[in-house]
Image (tube, rainbow, N blue to C red):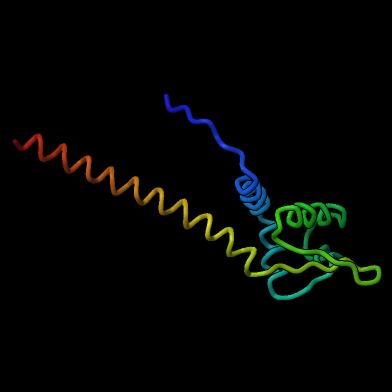
Length: 120
């Protein structure tokens, strides 16, 4: 059995919050919409078949994950996302891909070694 202790660094926790936030399709859509420019939470709420409060909760999760920023303008709450915040998620996925590609390459080497030994 493979047993490894998971190190909970601050960086790992930030990445976990981002992946958790993006696990929900509504939140992914909010990020996508907020990439085009600043939007009010009220305007966002009209786009989804849920209450305003539910949309606010989605926005709060995205804000905690640093995927969007929120500011007040009078009575409105305005949200915006940046390509840098999305890029940080892509970079995390690229790092995971590198690890798995390395493992797949090593697996291929092991299989080739075993085939070579069987032929001898």
